[in-house]
Length: 166
Image (cartoon, rainbow, N blue to C red):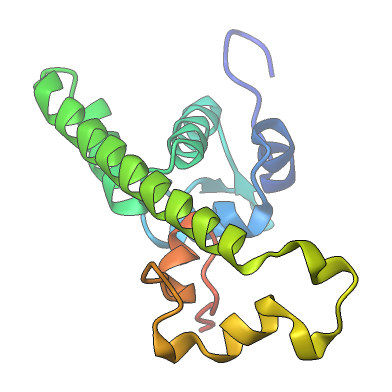
C-alpha cells in the first residue's frame, strides 16, 4: 500500500515479523490481549501496525516474565496516556519480587541437586546411585525445598494446553 498507510499483514506475516507463533496470536485474540483484526472478503485476518506494535509489547513483557493478567493491565495503562505511571511501576515491582522469589527457589533446587550427586556416581551401579535413592525416598524429607507443581510453570508459555473449539 502507499500513501503512508501501513501494509496489511496476514497472520503468517505478523508471526514472522514478531517471532510469535500463529497459534499464540490467535490465543491472544481469543483472550482479548490483541484486538480482532479486520477480515478480507475471504475471511482471512488482516493486521496493521497497531497489531504489530501491541504484539511486540506483549512479547517483550512475556520475555520479562510478566503474567498475562499483568500484561492486560499494562496494555490498558498504555492505552490511557493520562494514567499514573505509579500503577505501571507497581506492576513491575510485583514482577521483580516474583522473579527474585523464583531465583531463590531455583538456587535451593540447585543445592538439592548438588547434594544428590556424588563422585562415585559415574562409576557406580544403580543399586548404589544416590540420585535414584533420593528420588525414591522423597517423602522422607531428603528434599530441602518445596517444588512447584508442573502446572505452576504453565505461566511461562503463551499457548493453552487445551484449546477450546467451537
